[in-house]
Structure formats: C-alpha cells, structure tokens
Image 1 (cartoon, rainbow, N blue to C red):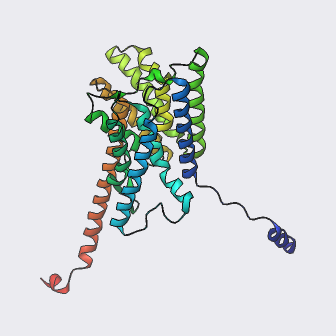
Image 2: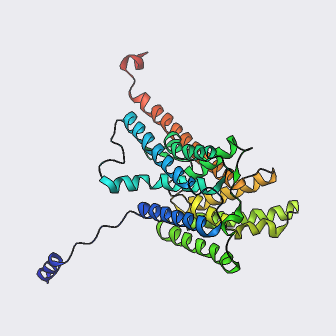
Image 3: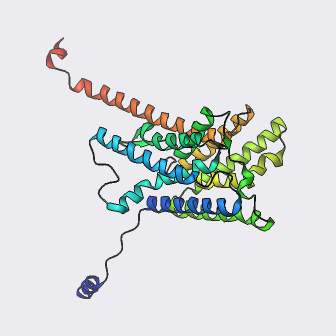
Length: 322
C-alpha cells in the first residue's frame, strides 16, 4: 500500500504556491481605485481636471523611487524595486499608485494642483520618514493616503477642501445613485473579507460610529438621522472600505482591529464635539500617530529593561570588589 501511495505522489503535479495575500489586496485596491477614477471622470461627475490623476501618479512613482533609493543607500541594502524585473517594479509601485489616486480623488483644489501634489509627496514620503520598531524591524505607521490629505488640508486649508461628496453620483440617475454605493460596498467587503481580513476593524469602526452618533443625539441633541445618515454616503463607504482598512497601517489580529476601528470612531466623536472639520481624516491621523508612539514607547521600555538585566552580568571583578 505504501508503494502505491509513493507512486501516486510521484506522478501527481506539485501544488501551486499560495499567492501573497498582501500583493493580491494591493493589486485589487489599485485596480478598484483606477477603475473608479475612470468612471468618475467619464460618467459620475469628478470635477478635478482629467490630467491631474496622471500627474499625481507620476509624482507618486517618482517620490517612491527616490526615497526608496535613499533609504536603501542609508541602510546599505538593495532597493526593493530591484531583482524581480518588471514584475518587481510593478509590485513595488502599487502602494504609491493607490496613494496618489486617492489624494487627488479626495481633495478639491480648484485650479491649484500644487497642494494636491504636496499631499501626494507627504503621503508617499511619510512611509520612509515616519516609522517605528515592530518585532525587530522598522515599519511605517501612518496611513499614507490619509496623511497626505490631512497635511494638505492643514497647510493649504484656506485654498483647498475635501472633494464634495455629490461628485461621486452627480451625473447618475436615481437607480445608479443607489447602486453605486451598493457596488462599492460589495467590492470593498469582498476585498476586506477575503484578502485583507479586516472585517473586525470595519465592525469596530461602524459600530463605534453608530454609538457615538447615538450619544451625541442623546447628550447634545444632535439630529439623529443627520448623525447616522453619514454612513449611507459614497464618501463614507469609500473611507470605510478603502482608507481605514489600509493593510500596512492597521492591525492584523481581530481584537486589535476592533480596538483600532472603535478608537477611530471615538476620536471622530470627540473631534465633532469640538467642531473640528474634516473629522474622518484627522481621526485616523490621531489614532495612527498614537499607535506609532505606542510602538516607540514599548521599544524604548523593552530596551531599557534589557540593559538593566545585562548590566549586572557584565560588571568587572574590580567593580564588584569596590
């Protein structure tokens, strides 16, 4: 019987290696946002100049390549875009592609492209500048797209604003005004359930968002339907499925995901109480920043403890005699 099994095993085809879930998620994110931009400019009603997404993407590619080359030189390693040919370059540029299109799509700067490009540069470069030690290696902790958008809003707040939500369905009829959010939510849910596995994060975020809306209605008499109705808009659905669930800057474990998502909702509610505008973006920046600071604190505390443990063991005999 063992002979038969060995023969069958020898004749069978080797199993295909499993594809990287992170790559699949990035690829699908990039494809989704690219298709949505094409539809947005041709059918939906995007109001930014049609050339801007192309300029934004080229800027993002350039910044990513330059900063990766500098980082590789400083760390004495090979750049990550080398060694795999065209496929390696394509995979390497996927995050910059997503960030560039997202910043351009979600900002409205009238005829001033420089604030948009500023946001792209900050978002892409922030991955190299804002890092924290995690499990023995450095990782970026700020959501690139969100960081770029927030930085542009802070620096150029009197010139630019968030893209008006109506542009996502401006030219659609009544049927498609309902179907567009449904399609976006369905596609995003599939990606986040199958590839990024961020369902717990979304549950924490949406559950926390609903609770803070109820509390603001109960305590401060905020109109309930206005507070909750935000959840039905295209902008909120895009933010929920494609912004807050960024694989590189959100937790992997289910419990941590839930805490992360609900924390963003709590910060969102607090900012609204103080009448802070662009609340969604500032909430994510604050939570990501606190998460990165927590990593640094944990690293420094762990290093100080290790030094305190090693020092007595390495004392010289003369020091002990003294």
